[in-house]
Length: 197
Image (tube, rainbow, N blue to C red):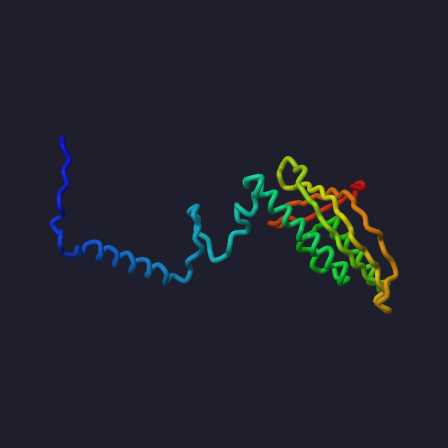
C-alpha cells in the first residue's frame, strides 16, 4: 500500500468549516462565563466556590522541592530575619518580627526589646553574616543554619539624652539557628550562640 498526498477540494478558496467551529467555541465559552456561581479552576476536577484553597500543594511541601531550591529559600529567609531583627532593636519595635520568627525566639527577642523600651534605651549594631546550611530534620520542615556572625559595632544609647552609654567590642561568634516551615513560610524558631569563630 502506498500513501499519496491528496489536495483538499477547498484548495485555493477559504474554508468556512474551521471558522464556524471557532465561532461556536467562542460563543460557548462566553456563555460559560455568565454563571455567577462559577468557582475557581481546579485541575483535580473538584468544583468549589470562589474560596481559594486553604493551602496550595507546592507551598506546603518543601520536601518535594529540590534541595538546592529549599536551601536558597531558607538562606534568604534567614537573611531577612537578620535584617528585621536589627531593625527591631534600632527602633525598639518588635512588631515586624512575627513575619520572620516564631517562638521561642520571637518571645525572647520581644521581651528583650521591651526591657530596653522600659529603660529608655536602644541598641544599634552592625553585623556581617556568613551563613550556610548544615543540616535538616527528617521531615524536611526544619533546616539548620550555621553562621559565623561578626559584630562590627554594637552601641547602647539613652533615648533621654541621645548619648552612648554602652558598647560591645568587635567579635565573631558561631550561631546555630533553626529555620522552621510554619504557616506556609520559613521562619526562625531558635538560635544558639556557640563559640568564637
